[in-house]
Image (cartoon, rainbow, N blue to C red):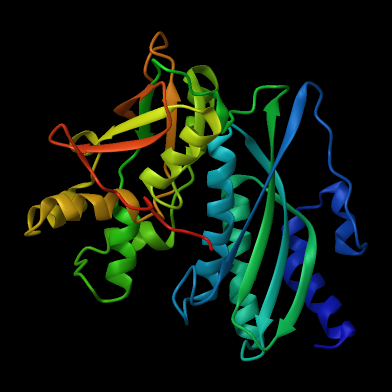
Length: 315
């Protein structure tokens, strides 16, 4: 793509996504100025999606764009942050036609509008590789109140939002490995919903938090490592959707199947620790406890089970 074509496409596809934000300068500059908000810190997160690694080859471009934004917003949700802007970097495959790039921009536009963000800048290139997109998202938190992974203390309770395992089963459905007659699992995998609705509740009650992207066990382990504590997870207490529960009931080895649900990832819920003295926020299920020690113990029927790595490994 020539420079003229690139800049013309940026103006046509992505300038409207700035929503006129002053610091974006209509995407005519090669840098942006972030807004300020008195009494608040800026929380920054960055995630990337690669075709064939994080989503199936040939996935609809608008769905890729929407998931890219949502997985980043999930990180902000776990920090108790209110999103306001983002930067996009994308490597278009040479096979992508103008209609594919337009469809990506349309998907991103829809979710930027839905979640109240402005596109502030970024970069586009063309490559011989697969579709690769990276997004940097930013949000506000009251000064000094970002919820870190390192705040869990012995005596805290371990909780998770929503339901667990739908993302892993949704990917299996997309691959044709299981049936998903109503499409609920597939939808959950393709368009996860970042738990920004829990922001105030987490700020009030959570001592530590992480989003469930790699797998419930793996992400709980991140909290345990950062906090220097030991977490226990009781599988029977993990919240399941009706679709996941129905699938589980049909499995010949329920223990192994349960582990698949809590290690599969792509749920984009929030796993957190709560002070035992704080009221339990609505939308959270208690699934375990925090104790002195290290690591994560997963129990089924009161007995420890081997959860392996606990989820997705990036290297």
